[in-house]
Length: 366
Image (cartoon, rainbow, N blue to C red; front, side):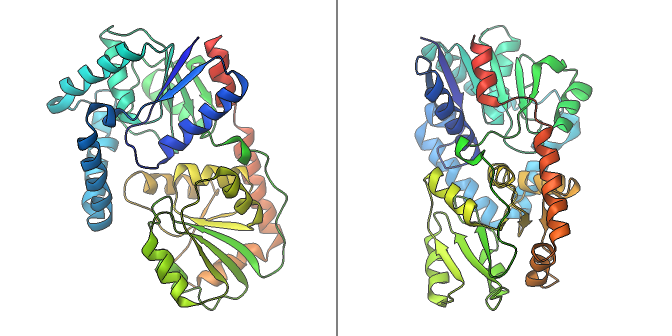
């Protein structure tokens, strides 16, 4: 029996887990003889440390977003680090733990869905301490400098632009890189018919699994926008659910955390558009459903970089807080020509994909 080991970093719900879960589901459906296993690397190292890191991260981006942004840019995006990223003060400990994990698991294929496990595996490959084939699966619309490159056998990238970047900037051979998009659960990949073109427009608002972003402020400006019916995905933010419920506004309907992919797909099928943060997974799901995407806010760090890409490619529109949100939404949804242009851009994005991620994994295992 072949074993595929998926390596996210933390336990908290994130795109790194959603990508791994989607691929595991697709592989198990078609090849039950393959053993798929997912291990959060930091939990493996020390569960107490993992919980501390998760709590610190959530507080950091909530209470000190600018400090987080500067730190992220310094360590993950600074061009001088490219291809030579090292964190020497904890490098030895984590490298040893990764080597220990791989010795215990003996996988036939390693799939990294987070940059830090990829960095460690890359170092072990460089030192010829492991020889297992490795895939990087990128979960944002850019590649930060923590991701391992040397020794990584295959790269599943979201866009053709990133394929060109890996080939031109890092001299990675084109046959090692596949444009797969960001993998999502197969239930989202059937697309959908164009939504109703008359008010009240059904709009899905998402703040991610933790209900982050300025959702309350956004909805304050849409309280009287009766041309829409909003379902608000509040994630695990119970205070946000209670706050919106207390408003008693009929066209604003808060939902708690939705764990079912089928239920999430049903909501996408209902929606005429999505208002969200620029997280790689949520955006990719909405693109699969051919939905217009409006960005209401971005967390510091990777989401801000995603936002720049999405706006530059006209795959999403950033809402301007200085203008009426209602008018910005209606300018698109009431305009058939603009909606058609949007769907054409989404179609062009999907056509650029070269492979289906789960299928390519099966091919590589063969």
